[in-house]
Image 1 (spheres, rainbow, N blue to C red):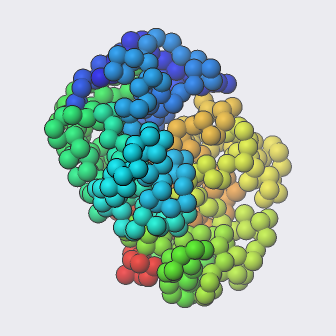
Image 2 (cartoon, rainbow, N blue to C red):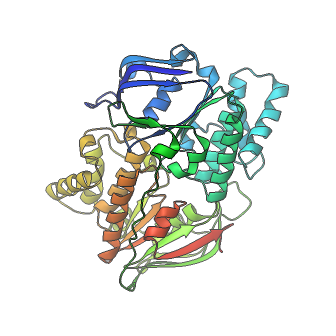
Image 3 (tube, rainbow, N blue to C red):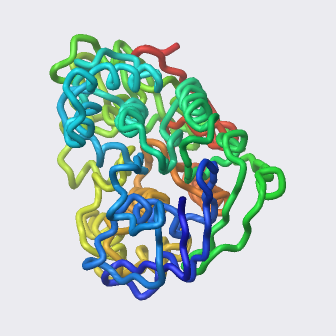
Length: 457
């Protein structure tokens, strides 16, 4: 099914190769987990297998074959779900989005919608096919993207962090879908997933990539997947003064009939980390954006200090709160990683020398120094997430408001991120984070607020 001989890829403008010296054979019907540190080239390999790397826009070496041919010629037999589901949703309605690929494959009209409905049911999509895609949460978009790939009935299915933004029930449903799809060995499945325990039972082989340099291990899940010990980072002092509060917070997205958030109260104090949990679509991301002053409540009051947060000008807002979006690329504004980290401190009034010093320190701390000159949009998902967290911390605001801050992290970078966030809290800052990552909630959350259907559970 897949054969790589000395294959490598380097992105334009990069000195280091994303992947190099890869020798790999995956047989028809195998279920393989690609593992390795953040930035090891796992997502790059999936893009190459899907035929989505443009040979004229990068440098390649060696040979990579799918079904015995270059991947660009076998796209009609391959389905891929990207690390960021928003990048592959193209239509305004959910059903139309799943149908889009089938229409482009010239599937007869009478066969399209039965396949659309079967794919939506297979991933547990909770709405009708009329649901507006802009009204979906990140996890719901992930399910929809998976449905779009499944509807094509591919022989090779490539999944990049398929459960990363899903609640536990959604992750279980997706695991069941993947298991049923690959049970008869008629389809080859290659998965990238940092939470290896989530997919360990689904795969029969684990291939561990080294950053920029081939394979360091290849074996069974039993031999290669071992749980990492969890270190607790709980506050040791009682919380102090309130940094932010919400009262009766409610919000409705345009074009929807129901409230995404309905009457939620919240206080965030200095010296505490509050975890927001709940199913996909429960209102976690909406609450994060309301507290951060990036949405105006339909009802109720959101405050940072003594001011209504949504009324604050950008220059004052940046001194009070650092925000990390669920999709990190939505907040990048420059063409270099080091410039991205200097933007906030400059805007907050720091000198150029101070801004550059802050950027350099964070680059080293979060293992991004070798990417200082890279374009943020060319980073891996895990690297983009670390960069987005670093930009929030760079201005040293009292409050950090974070949406899925540990997405795409290997054990080492997860530990480094949590240590950095704990240091902010222990120095008197506050942290409000929305997450499905049970390890983060357990190890770092001092208090948990569970949401369900827009209300505190």
